[in-house]
Length: 378
Image 1 (cartoon, rainbow, N blue to C red):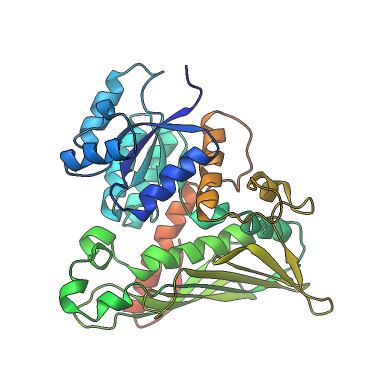
Image 2: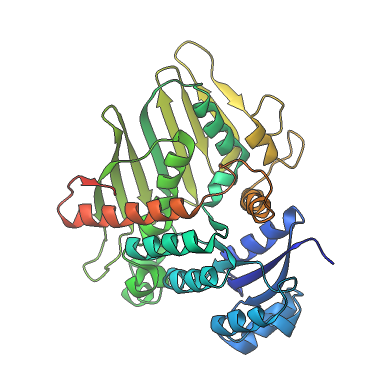
């Protein structure tokens, strides 16, 4: 019998970027086997896609409810153990809740739900289910992000006083200026995406990266959004001031209309003894800043890195690893948790990260609507 974890996939069919990212990531460390799926809401397209990527069609289901019903009929040694939820945002909550209620482990795309209230319901459901739940804040899987986390934890830069996180993309710029086009994009539809586009899609990644790397909690925020057009209900650009403590402050800058930008996530943490800076488009470099020493550059795979960083490095120094490897490291951590093995709490984002993310998203929307005022996170 295969020792691989039996994986189900919901969504991610066709030319979905998220779909191929999760499928490849699940295979990299040889821990998972895709045994069942609903890749597409159209059953014929669903089956055709399964054939295209060479997944057996006997457990390709017509819809999500059928998947759960039929899988529960199978012996526990054969049924899906964990499901990856890769659908549009509005489907995350009902799918994740039902999976948890029926004893499945869950790997969920972010944002975890479309509302903070739903996130708290999921949290309560997980507490009863006692299964594993991961939220795929993908960038936490990069070895140099993990190295940043461990260096900060070890006191390498001393007490933190300033944080600067930026996530700039430009892809909506080609859509937003055409009224007909922007009405066809699901991320600009609050019924499918939730109450936020920019902060809900990418700003929340920057928020998560700050809390992940620093180990600190963002306590209050002040947000200013841009919608560009009166008929557009969804933010496409925003700046958020953050307070983590009385003397620990920072900023999150996020945009989907930063013309020409691709996937410009970066984070800089400044402390009393030094600073650390990392950029997603050059992920194999962690810059160590100091007032009295030359700039240092840390790279993956070297013995000077932390155990957590090295655990997420699969190749010798000088061999670049990227986004697939980063997601694969999250899947690797989830596999360890499912098997009851020992793992570092930085190996994958959890339900609490999902709850925190929804609190952040709703608070930024509230702050902007109330005229750019400070809002305390729950």
